[in-house]
Length: 236
Ligand SMILES: Nc1ncnc2c1ncn2[C@@H]1O[C@H](COP(=O)(O)OP(=O)(O)OP(=O)(O)O)[C@@H](O)[C@H]1O
Ligand SMILES: [Mg+2]
Image 1 (tube, rainbow, N blue to C red):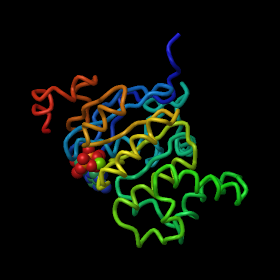
Image 2: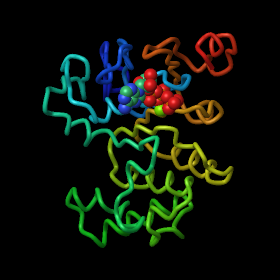
Image 3: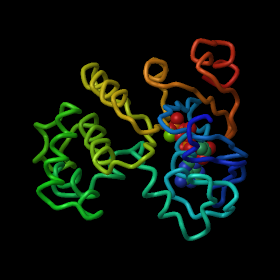
């Protein structure tokens, strides 16, 4: 028996309201337990839209197209996806909302029933692992771009979802922060889906790679990362 399928997409389609071309045009993939899957592709190829669907940000239109632990996610049950999949948005400003970084990172554990002192200790632990304990008491809106990105990631790590969906986690990080990020992620047991333009990170961190083009999967396999012809043919 192979590893468990945690999340499965079957022919997922989506068009943004008023748009003439689909953002997702029949995407099928499985996320396996413990797997780290990179999603690469040119700007506008559908990576963020894909991650947001996995994390329950859109209303379900076709229950047969998203399955969680083998069961279709019915209309109105998007909360199941939101609990199972921790999404770090491409833009950290979409995510951070509490008056301090520490409170922000402790927010979801507290909302899910953890005591405040325990949640704060967990939040500090995650901030330390990412090398940003020093910004724990700062208001998120006064952080640098890279600090915001790490703070948003810390919030999702503290929520301990079984799947992580990370949208451009290494964007705007300095080399040290990027190294800490890669080390931290590679030490985590959760399955991860990582949308990224950082092909070097994808190669170090991920077990498999999906290349998106115009809302569809154009190629699959780690070999893509070194295949200039395939990358070029798909707008990269
Ligand atoms: N809110 C929106 N309304 C309408 N169209 C959108 C919206 N967000 C994205 N799109 C369109 O959907 C398609 C996929 O966009 P998406 O953001 O998923 O791409 P991406 O691969 O994440 O790109 P990038 O590498 O720039 O982050 C694009 O054609 C984009 O213009
Ligand atoms: Mg994107």
